[in-house]
Length: 305
Image 1 (cartoon, rainbow, N blue to C red):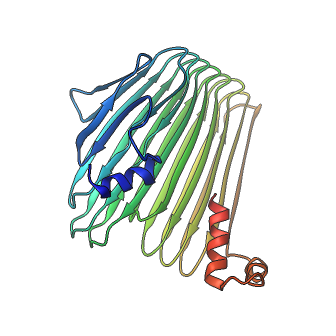
Image 2: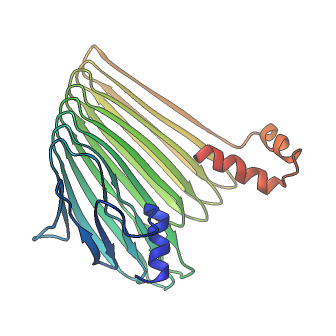
């Protein structure tokens, strides 16, 4: 891999070198390395482009890295990855895609990830998106995530997009059985004329299931964001969605809450706040010697941390 691809790997997967444990690195639609372990098997799909990742029941303290990097202008791909997580497993899965586009054609990666989470299993899933390059071609990322959670399983999702992605439509669907718990933390920043749409549809079908979906975002320049989150409670359950956004310049933000209770003991609520950086926050930092621009960056960095 060249230096640009290594830099992208660092941005989206925090990888300075080949990771320990299972991994599959994809570069410009080709495999750049793969390793399975005794408990985690990675194989290629035969009918479509993508992977099957099978994690044995009881697997603990192991990780799977499946980052994607693209440096060819005009390259467009769709990848289908399925994860089968065995009962009682406790693992970390790191995905994400980085695109460096220095050409005039659009580059696009659409990743469709499906998770089948066994009873009592626990997953921490990290997905980071990053774009760079000085070409006129766009950097486009459209991730689709489907999560099917069996009894008493847990999934924590960290979804991050801070820089360089021109257009993105993030679609997430989750179906939870009894006692299952889903936690989502989305961090997003757009600038220029970028557009970002995040759609979540969570079905709480089992007794004692719960979901907590929180998005923090910053819209700068003339960029546009839409956060569309729907939680459906079909059993005694608890669901919460929250959109907390900072708007700057001529940015636009649309928050669309959706709650549907189909059971008398479904407890669902939504919070949304959109506003500019408070003047007193800026003044406080500026009295410490920061310029207004430096103060804004400090506030934004803390907000998105």
